[in-house]
Image (cartoon, rainbow, N blue to C red; front, side, top):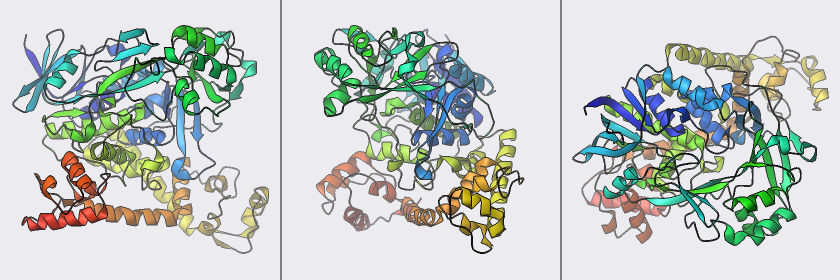
Length: 628
């Protein structure tokens, strides 16, 4: 059978694969997305939710780069909340509960808009090579596709195995889908050493059998929020979430059956995500806790099924039914799907370049859970980076690597390739040393011009970018020039309450009061109503002003980092022979083989003294670090 030729082939139709294929096609590369079941592209395999702490910022960054996730989320939102509003803006986090059935349809609709992208339903059995480079892929049905760049986004499918209790093991990439075994075996034959991680999902229940009178209702924000910078969608009819606590009765059932858990009964030996513990983990690791939060979250408008967030488990179905019946309001709830754990292969990401290309097999890029991460948003972010770089390489253009002070995408990628993972990696704001620069409100200002420069934006998006950045300048200019008299804000300050203004002065000085909000001042019924400013621009300008000192400090630190990133380290350095470095530093440097001095300084175990000695060792060899 003959083969077809593409610039980029993307394997896998999850969040990483869809964003990789979209980015590559937008850049002008002839792109093919191959997935085992086209009806499930963009599938939300676990909770049908996008966003959260740090994750919401990543989703907005993906959107600023022209991605799909934000648009699909906004069109299918059932429930939206901006988390952490009581805290500083660096940790504000948009989160949306989506319609599980409609979200994948919107993802596919976006993919099918792209003229340079083709879709194919099939399972890739093996990669083809010419020497030490990729040359294409072969599907199980015998179809061959030639490509010099392949992006592998296998998710949890590589030798995936579902575990329910100690006796039930099902080969599956997720519930209802077969695992990928042949490709996993070939990767092992190529010398890629895989490790195993596990993740899990909770049971679902029929909402018609829930006693909501015993639950605490949680409505979303009154003010509609959004993820996309390019379009404004009202989403769907809003639905509430519900909060309850699993107490001593649930603890008793789980404790009595702990040996029947796949995780604690010996059926699973791999590591799981620390920040998304199962109910077994919670009860064993936090024995003094009286109860644990459980959120019941809607799955969609056309179903009464609810996602039981907080009760992830690998206990047998009969035990799951029993502990569900001990949760207030769920005494008579019918379980529609049991929770389960899933084990899968991943590849330690230190063998990847910052472009997410595998260093030992040219042209092969990896993105998503195959790199040891967890979460839709982390996968989508890696998909953008891998897709952009695969396409740019195929089109013979320079690579693009986001910096740590430029985007959470930069933090994510650098953490993976420099530090590696010893548990499923999840982003937090605490991982970003420049978090005040990387807020959810300023993603477009940070990355929109990058997306335009790379060629990721369509004509209408470029016009939108110009308009929105112009609106930022307009609001900023007005705030800088405006003055305020005591009579202008007397009623407003009294209602806060806030001390009265004594004399006329700059508006910017008044805005330094924590309780004073620019959005209130320029609202239709506010002291300066009628100006018609864009709310997103108002929020960004206000945060820049209120945190100007901290932002300036972060920018200074970022400049120091940038200088280190300009110092390229010579290839092939024999780190293990540099006796002036600590033993740990030699081992870590030999393992990671950093591209720049800045990357070397972020490797755990490499001290500032090691960096200085490294420069000395390089000069001893008659070499000089070069500017990148």
